[in-house]
Structures are given as C-alpha cells and as structure tokens.
Image (cartoon, rainbow, N blue to C red; front, side, top):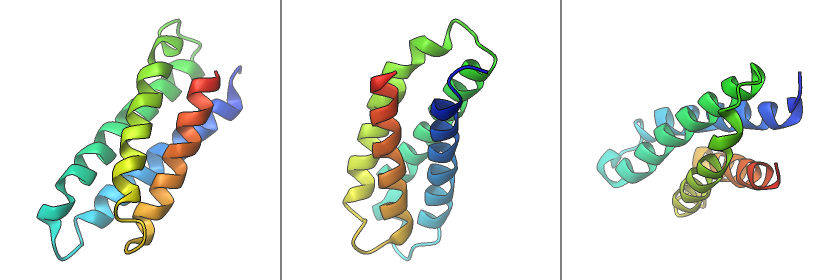
Length: 106
C-alpha cells in the first residue's frame, strides 16, 4: 500500500479530533466550545475520508489533500486558542498541524 505514513497521520489526526470533540462536550462551557467542536468534526471526517480513499488507491484521494490540509490548519488554529487550558485541545492542535504539513507535502 502506498502512502502508509500519510494514511497513518491522517487516521491519527481523525482520532485526535474525535477525542477532542467528545472532550469539549464535557467542558463546563460547551457553548464556548461550539466552533472547536464543529471544526473537530469536520476535520475528523475529512481526514478519515482522505485516508480511506488513499488506502484503496482511489484517484480521488489525492484531490482531497489540499482541502484536508486547509481544514486541519483551521482546526489547529481553533484548538490552539484553548490549548493552555485543555490538554485535549493541545494534543488535537499538534495532530492537526502535523497532518496539515504532511498533506501539503504530499
């Protein structure tokens, strides 16, 4: 399978985003976290879809890399706003930045 490292980074980012969204729902001020949760969900889905398409060597996987990098960057920026107070956002931001870099380099 081609792109194994890229696929692994995409799935790791998806997992981090799903965990972050679920953790944000447990925060005291969930309403304050709504933008973070939405971006987490968008990012998790685009990363999972891109990884799945690349894993089965679909010609469409390559097309999603630019969009995936963009959403990962937006999500990282949002999570970084909360990273000093929330470990799950800190970890998610790091996973998103890594995924953004890898997708842009692919």
